[in-house]
Image (cartoon, rainbow, N blue to C red):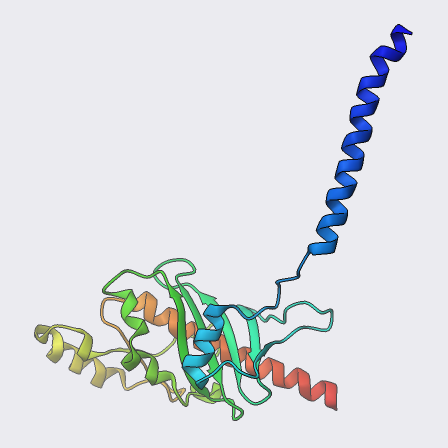
Length: 220
């Protein structure tokens, strides 16, 4: 009798815990909503900035049903004609540049939208200015250096004080741009942020090229 009195309470508690856990699992499975692959409001705003609207865009998935990614690419969005690559790149800060790079059907950059930026205020944050981002429009893979190569950079005089303009003009004349056909006009005082944006654009172009190559193989 005493043995039953000692054993019975723990057994009852154990059964209650098992039943409760089972009910919680069942409730979770019944109400769970898969949010992976959903285009967030932030991405919608970026798409609207690049293309006027996010209508018709969907987040692409790989053959296993997961979100399609490439090296350095968080996700890929497409409306069947235009493609946008979500990229988190390092600037002065690690992961300080979260951007959306739009690529048109000809494989050229249609625009760059800044989703979030964690760079130095007043310096690195200038890479989100339209005048800086517009230099990437129309750039394609043949114009930009391959991964691993040093990007051609020249300082952009508009970002500096008048006392340095003559010096920068001389440096620009001496640089002559890169052999790739594209020279990055870096924000003075924000070289790392500028190169981070260049890297993000290059990553998008590489991913677009890889995606089209894979599509060609699948259709071949």
